Amino acid sequence: MQVRKLEEEDKEKLEEIIKQICEENWPNYPEELAVKELWLTDQVLVAKKNDEVVGVVGINVCDPYKVMEIGYLFVGKDSRLEGVGKKLIDAVEERARNRRKEVLRVYTGIKEEWAHEFYESCGFKESGVVKNFEFDGDKVVFFTKVVS
Image (cartoon, rainbow, N blue to C red; front, side, top):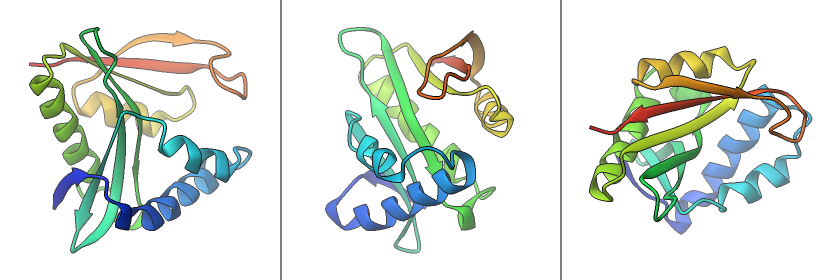
């Protein structure tokens, strides 16, 4: 499996993955807005397996602070539980170290316990809960990890 920066040829498959994730997890969230948000991060990395995009992570660098934020991490339905998400997290950590960042930060919905378990398995610790953070007024959980 290869992790690299997003290229133009990847966009169509990524949009498929985003729409799939929205249908599964956020049926009330407009798909076109989710696709638009895909391009609002500083860096987008993709995981490719057998020359097909199977996952994506968006990173916000947060200069001049010592923080790098994961804006989103999605893995296609057919590639889950195969280490794709962990490979993407490893790539983010490498970029954080290269940019001398000390902390990775991510947040996820309070009801998305599978995501909490994933981030905790990657070494993140829950660092707080915020109410009314997103459009639906639900709570979100913040996770942080010290970059070593």
